[in-house]
Image (tube, rainbow, N blue to C red; front, side):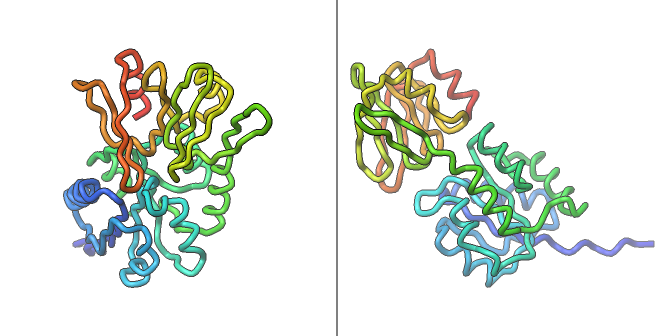
Length: 250
């Protein structure tokens, strides 16, 4: 008896990097029985795309400049359902624990064919859970842990995504924010490092700590790395002694 052919899995991919979309779509098509219903580099269009395409699985990048993946899920709300969400992220440890706790599936960049084959198998076995707004709310609460930075007469609180990088300034530390503002705290960089959540930040040299979510490029020949936030790119020195830490986190 011939088994009926499985219905193609309709996929939507949202990622601000066109090359990441191309690579993911290529690997998905290699897995077979896949239909790429839509792709976009603009997270602001997600709601409309989902309404127009009714996908089976949404592949959603976590860190995007206009709106991150968590914010996108919050915006979708309870009005759209009946699909599974797979978060695609360069983060590890802390962020992945949050996804696991709230039953979101996830893939680490760079995505491999083995990762996708395993995920597609789980989908056919009905082991990928449908999007659920209550899971989003719980995930957001899990990630709302603020970074507490003391100053001389006050204390500042930041969400990890608000900070681009930290730079040592003698006994002080400058905090460079994504919105362009800079603050200076009266504690040194080593003390700041101890206050940071694991998986979000990495020390790249004696004088700088960067937010991994904004890391665009590592140039070992020039001994530097590039951060990208919006239309701004910043090049910072990379010390060989810290390169292995960066490799492990990425």
